[in-house]
Structures are given as structure tokens and as C-alpha cells.
Length: 150
Image 1 (tube, rainbow, N blue to C red):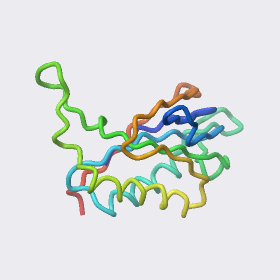
Image 2: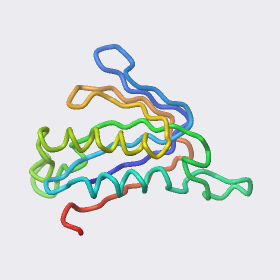
Image 3: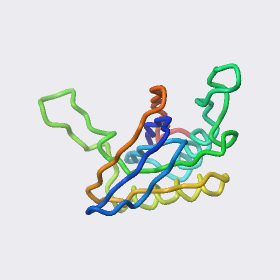
Image 4: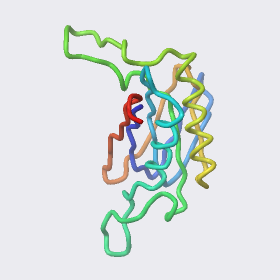
């Protein structure tokens, strides 16, 4: 499972001209699910994201987490995070889990984040979405946990 995490001052996701999720200060998480991922990866990445210290403290150092700042999270499904571009010019998505596997894990991630006390907005799984954001910093971090780990 991969999470591309961006610290934002605002972010939104629009589907068919309607804003479906919007946050102010917080994290935009683009979430990709890989074949072999399960509940362990969901919980690991949810906890990692909400506790990731990428917000500045009073000394200007990245030392505070989303939980400490009271920010929100916008979660958007992103199977293209598993696009393999090593061969040819068109990405291969064979590592990405099919929707029947990835959708429940995506929703489990959203529930886990909310259960940890963070307000969560989300996109629409499988929809064509437009994501708008103001990356604050810029700060972008890639988090990953393979489904094969215990």
C-alpha cells in the first residue's frame, strides 16, 4: 500500500462539477492499494499518516503531527501510484489491486483515520476526479508498506 502525503493549506476533490470533499490546513493523501495488501497495511498507514511529524512547531521545525495541529485529511484513491513505467511508454498497472479488493481497503483507511480522531474528507472511489491543492512548503512524502510483511 502506498500513500503519497502532501501537507496542504487547502485541498478539494471535484466529481462531475460537484465538490465532494474539501479541507483547509492538513494532509492530502493519495492512496494506492497493491495486490496482497490487507487490514495490516491499512492500520499501519493510517497511524503513520496521522502521526507523521511534518507540521512546524514554534521553532519552525517539522515536529508536529496532524493530531497535534488539529488539521484534517482529504483521502483520494489513486491506483496509478502502482504504475510501472520501466518498460515502454505506457504504464503497466499489474501491481495495483482490482477495485473489488482495493475499495474496501480504501474505505477501511478512511474509517481508521477518522477513528484516530482526525476529520476526514474523501473523493469518490473509482470516479474521474479533479483534485485541487495548495501544497504548503512544499512538503510531499511517500509512505509505503508491502502486503507481504507480517
